[in-house]
Length: 168
Ligand code: FES
Ligand code: FES
Image (cartoon, rainbow, N blue to C red; front, side):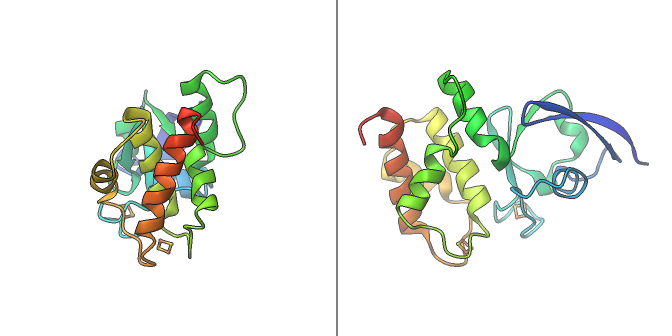
């Protein structure tokens, strides 16, 4: 049965009307009309629906909305502010460094997978600021791109890592 739930999305408390087992993705994309997380497989297989929950990449298509009550959800829309808070910057940049690096490497083709790619890469760099190529490959392994952009995604993550370290 639908009921009122409060969830924290991009540092704002939002009241939504949903049954507790409603997938978080439906609430974010449907009720809150956020365009970052996308429906791909609906089976936790592709990563296009990913969001950060308390800083951890989470597949919103298989996460009941009741599971994230009391937690902090960050979608693509809130990622620059999330980064600014982590780095204790005075204000949020227009883009997270991963987003800028993907543009600089011209990695994006159709773009459908890139919500999840960006969310996962941002999580990785928050935990491992200077990952090896093997660590990047392992981290990104569960994100599917039908356009085959993987080599440029790896380069972009390496570029973002350098930018975040102030060496690029
Ligand atoms: S739509 Fe959630 S993992 Fe594919
Ligand atoms: S850029 Fe098209 S699916 Fe990845």
